[in-house]
Each structure stands twice: as structure tokens, then as C-alpha cells.
Length: 432
Image (tube, rainbow, N blue to C red; front, side, top):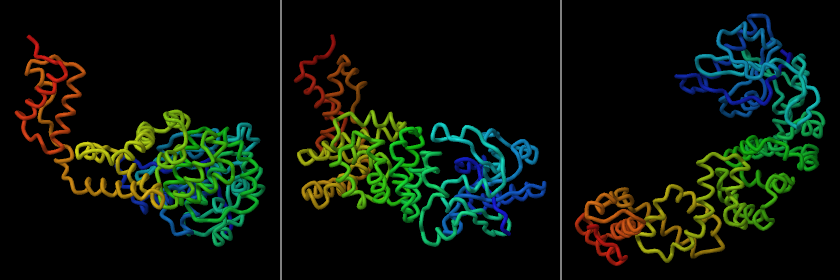
């Protein structure tokens, strides 16, 4: 069969239906059911895009794009449970027991006025639909029932050669949708492919336009490139294309060079780790602006801030006693900090490497109940002892915990006696 197919806009990942197991085979069976139902009603239906590419590469498939010549209103008549998430672009979500599937009508697109979305679409045949997609390896069509492939763009040859190539004129593809430049970086890093020369030159030529892309979309592509692919490749392409300095003009050439020096040893990494490396030369506090610009989650913001602030604390840990070291290694993001700093220091700062190894060994050897011991006394204990609450409470209670971590205090009576002497030394007396 040579009849082709197409897909929706940039398709979102398949969402599991409530109670679904996430079984990849079940998700595929659901996708086949959707396509078969469309065909039973007289419409074309094909798999397209990443699911076809990944099947041919032997990669696991967790999402399916289904394309059809059925119009959105016809799709909603075929299926009982649907959501119109992009009806103006021909996209309907079909809800099945195992997952939710995007079904898109074959379409061609008018001029892109914002570098992201077409000003209008018209419904076309499968071949025309494929020709407006981004890369040849994403333009392959698969018969959902017999697995036969239709290829109008040379995608199979590029898969075999492991080359990422834009469909048609790469300048047109990137002018239409500026996000495609970052997608090219991600695909190259995650698939281990080479970038076609013409496609690479077009990315360099259009790099400055990436600022028009919503930063939430930028964040997703960067996150996936570094966490799912080869971070060394991702950073090299971002740097040499000019995309990195366009997106993050505050990052210094020295920081980029240092990050490129170590990132291969870091391995696949969360985005905050990479940002922490790139910001090493930046003024304190700049991570807050970066977090806001990239619309990072609260968890990622906290991690980035910790990695930035923790650099100096880790470097000073050699002068800490046991309590200070235990406090450091029990912090929520200590493992990320120690791994990152050890990679940076390896080969350049032997004392820091030794210190990190010592701290990590201490954490591994310390039982949880010793690392996070229950408090011997608290503020209520001090109030019951006749002291008025105030800033001194925290100072004294922290000192009590330090003594406990050092192993010098082991019961409430000794802890209260220590606290009483400490409060007296600070000029605190019991209330009348």
C-alpha cells in the first residue's frame, strides 16, 4: 500500500485514561482500534510521526498520532467520547479505555505570522499533509493494521543513514515554526543522528528568531535534550548554532566552555543541573531571573537555587565539624550538588574531589535515625521551663541539635540543661 497519511499539529503525548495500566501494547491496540473505526466509516486513517519513526528504530512507543481525511465534525460523530482541543486545526482527542489519542485531519497551512502557528489551515490529502511536517524521519506513514510504510519524503533512507533532515527547504521549515530548531537539537541528541548540512546551516541562519518561541516550549525542548539524550551533543549544537547565546545572553563564553568541558562526564542531566553549570560565572541571585524566564516549576527553581548557593557551602565543608557535615549531607538536594561539583572538580581540584567522597561516604554510613534524630527538646520545652519565645529559641535549639549530632547530648535532661546555660549566656532569663 502506498497511500500516505498525516498527523495533528505538534502532537501532545498520549494521556492515559483513568485506571489504565500504561501498558505499551495496550496503548498500541487502542490506537489500532481508533484507526480501524475510522476506516470502517469510510475514512482514511494512518499512524504518522514519532510512533512510525520509533517503531522502525526499535524504540519503545508510548504515544500515537493518528491522521485521517475525516473532518473534525465527522470524527466526533464516529466516536462517543471526544474532546475538541484544536478543532480549528483539525485536531480531536478520542478517549479510549487505555489512553487518549489525538486524531488530526490532513491539512496544509497558510502563512505563519508568529513563527509558531499558521494563520489558517485547509484540509488536504495525506501527501500534502506530510510535506508540511518538520523532518523527513517524522514524515513517514504507517498502515495501522499491516504496518506497511508510505514514504513521500525520503524518511526511510534518512533513518537508515541516521541523518536528521528538514522536509523540503529547511529555511522555510524554520521560518514557519521557530521551535523546530530546538526540536532538531533534541532529535539529534536523543537519537544519535547527524544533522544534514543544509538543515544545520538553516538553523544557524535563523537562530536569532528563537526568541519568539514561548519559553515554556523552549524549556520542554531543552529539558528533553539534556535529560533524554546526549547532553554533550545537545550543548555543542546549541552553542555552535548560536541558539544558546540568543536564549541566554548573560552566560559567559568561559562558562560555556567549562560546561562543555564537563558535561560529557555528567551524563543525562536535569535542566537545573545544566543551568547551574552555565551560570557559574554569573552574579549571585541571577538564577531567579532565569527560573522566571524559563517558567520552571517550583521544584526546579528550588533545585537550581540550591545548586548555585550550595557550591560555596560545599567548598567550605572541609572546616565543618561532624554536626555541620551531617546537616549538609542530609539536605534534600545534596546528592545532586555533590555529583555536580565532583564532576566539575575531577582532574582540576583533587582536594574537593576527596572532600566530596568523604562526605558521601559519611552519608552512606550514617543510619537514617542518626542523620535525622528526633529532637530532644523544642520550643514548648523551653516555654514550659519559663522562657519567653524569641529569636534566641532557634539559635539555642540549633545548638542543641548540633550537640546531639556530635553525640554529646543523648537525653532530654542533658539537652535542657545545655539550653538553659546557653540562654543564660545570651542574657535570657526565665519569666517571672
